[in-house]
Amino acid sequence: MAARRAVIDAVEGVCRSYGFREIDTPRVERAQMWTDKSGEEIVEELYAFEDRGGRHVTLTPELTPTVARMVAARQQELAKPIKWFSTRPFWRYEQVQQGRFRQFYQTNADVFGAASPAADAEILAVAADALTGLGLTAEEFEFRVSHREVLEGLINSYDEGGEIDSRAAMRAVDKSETVPEREYYDLLVEAGLTLDQAREFDALIERSDLDAVAETAGTDRVREATENLQAVLDTAEDFGVRRYCRLSLDTARGFDYYTGSVFECFDSAGEVSRAVFGGGRYDDLIESFGGQSTPAVGVAPGYAPLGLLLERADVAPEAAIETDYYVLRVGDTRSVAARIARELRERGHVVETDVADRSFGAQMSYADAVGAETVVIVGERDLADGTVTVKRMRDGEQTTAPVDAFPGDRERPTYGDFA
Image (cartoon, rainbow, N blue to C red; front, side, top):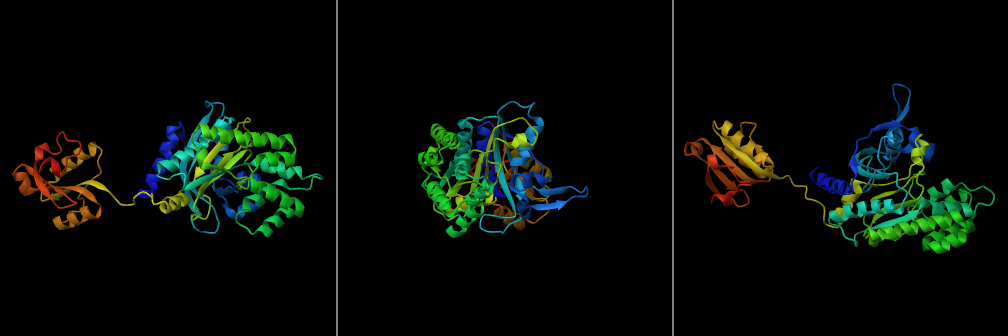
């Protein structure tokens, strides 16, 4: 938890620096919030059940539908754009593997009420600043950026007879990196494309040439979407994060509610086998919950895969327990020891003291185990002389200090102040 908390604090600190406000959200929601957007088959991936009121509910697998519902309920009261973040656990019933667990933590950061490419670019900047703030460099991660309207519009350009299931085709694209090529083509054919169309489509998105895609599709929808995607990338340059972004049209994201730009973060070396995190634009979701039409875009760093990336790059925070002071009590000295501990804590230090009536040796062993930097020994003999003993734990050096002057006016008194 010490290491995880350091990472969470860094990510949340970046969110706050961009003006995002922290919220809390329900852990249980109606399962329909996900089946409506991604099909009944998603129930197999949920911890879904019937509650005592006969409602079909689920432990939340991700946050986007929840915050969309919350905005829909209160959007008249809130100044736009609304910028929220939240860190909490989620649950998905799936195969446990590297960086993927059935209960996992992530931070969500979302902007509601801003349709400009600047909002997409700011979300990319929040993600990039969080990673670089943790010690990662451009050589260690990349954002693969795509656009749902480019992909779906290109798919629909092949649909002369209205027989293509574009949602099924988009889900096939989302699986393209994890299934064999033949199986990927089979999924596209099952969605309604011919095999030749599937091959042409795959070749186009593999090239990630926006002009070629727009020319092949030949529709205003795809042209406008490619222009929007290019605008997002251009604005990311202004935000200083374009160097982390790679145009990658075979990135689709799994949920059907995405409507515009989407992106996923990957380990550049390929040693983390899945996306570290992802995000994108979902402009229609709030309206689907009964709210007014409200553009929205967000990102959700997951801490299990992010931890793997930090370990691979050798910048993971230390997991060691740290204590600034251990106030060791010998004999009937509790009131003085408690006063010293209290005054050190008032200065913002981590301070422990004995609460189990242990021996001198047991207390010293504990102080060493919790990584105490300084031990303050409050003994009956020392107090009789008006002193306490200050011990520097890294080398065992110790000296005495006047009890009335410890800690005194010093913010962080140590052995060196009295030696």
